[in-house]
Image 1: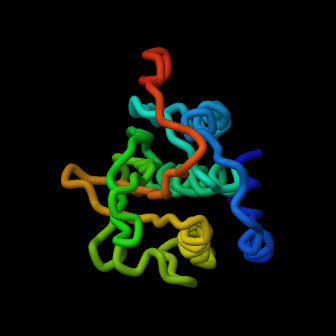
Image 2 (image 1 turned 90 degrees about the horizontal axis):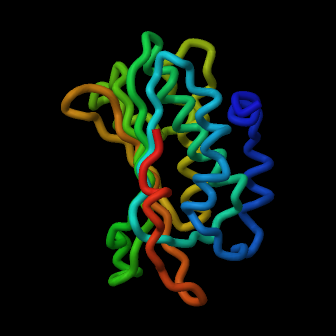
Image 3 (image 1 turned 120 degrees about the horizontal axis):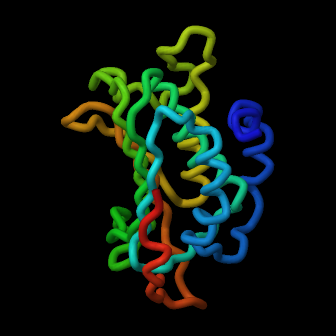
Amino acid sequence: DLRLAVTSRSMGEASIRRGLPAGLPERVDKLIERYWGVWKSVVPGNIAFTGTLGNEVSYIRMASDDFRWCVASLISNAVEAMPKGGELELRYYLSPSENPQRKGANDIVIDLKDSGVGMEPSILAKAMQPFFSTKPGHAGLGLSQLQWTLESAGGSVRLRGNPEGGVTASIRLPAAEGDRKSTRLNSSHVKRS
């Protein structure tokens, strides 16, 4: 159960992984394909969940379980922000790295855009802080742990309010360099609904 996996992940589990060397490169489009059905199965029927993949094939050096958990956590937050339903879109694409140490390199970006209730700018500014939560009974560790997990893989997460309402969460991960070149996906992988 994905919900159980999202809520039961412990700081200890993540800290064990942090010290491990980077694994073999994983193809991002294949990771998304592998977990798409699992992610979609936990989204209620009153939320339209769609996905769009960019045309480039890219690789990351991140444990696939960590990748799955990071995206699942953001999906879970988006679902909670849309109790009456709405739309959730996952987009994957390449973008020039924002890290000055990786000038000229690409980042893999995964955007999760929801049409939920949104967040006030003051809440967005605090959302990644440990122990901050607007949800009664929540410890406020989910987003800070997500941020820590992504930073451990050289990545980041950013939340921003959408002008039309809702929030877009953007995961950025460094594209793995070296042994594999980018190639085009065939058109059957470009759009999912």
